[in-house]
Length: 240
Image 1 (cartoon, rainbow, N blue to C red):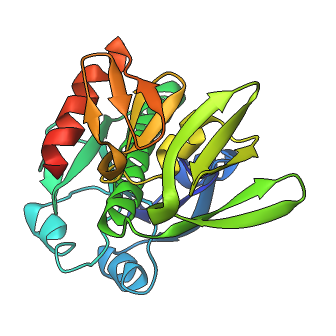
Image 2 (image 1 turned 180 degrees about the vertical axis):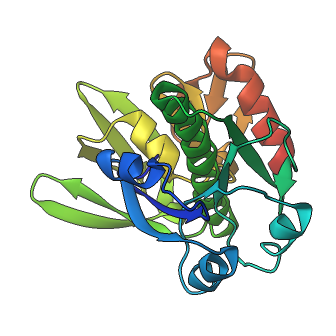
């Protein structure tokens, strides 16, 4: 669940450019938004925009400098190009600070970028999941042939993968789609639905009874996979 490009700003107070700006511009997955000689100018920019990554390449970076970032509503991932090999601070506003010792080697810089981007993608994913769980009684549009159908989560009873497609079953009918079960598992809220088998998802509050191997809805028996049993039981406990 990642972005194709990540916006980057650079704070560089060196009398001669270290070349990091030019290096950033070479990477297609980075969108270099600008270089600032002073942190104050970067903070002013960040108060109006929300860059993904902030890179410091400065002679000295104090605790007070990090504290100036605290009032920001959005704190980017921070990479410090370190002169003294001594990390000043591990966290800023709960965000990890990534340190890279000088002289900078491109392969090490890329690895640090990778870690920062992985952390950023994880936060983006958690925000999306939280939003989905927070508002579970929504809807989704499902394409069937050339038409999109609006299905509310409340109406869906279960989802069944078969014959190269997925059947979404609701109100006694099944709508066949070309979506994968994994895609629908990511779209449907965890508070209402659970993957119970390699081929099935069920609406939890539609379950009438279950055993160690079978889940019974009003008009269908659905197998409970051994690999899904622990997750299913945890989901049942949450809604009980």
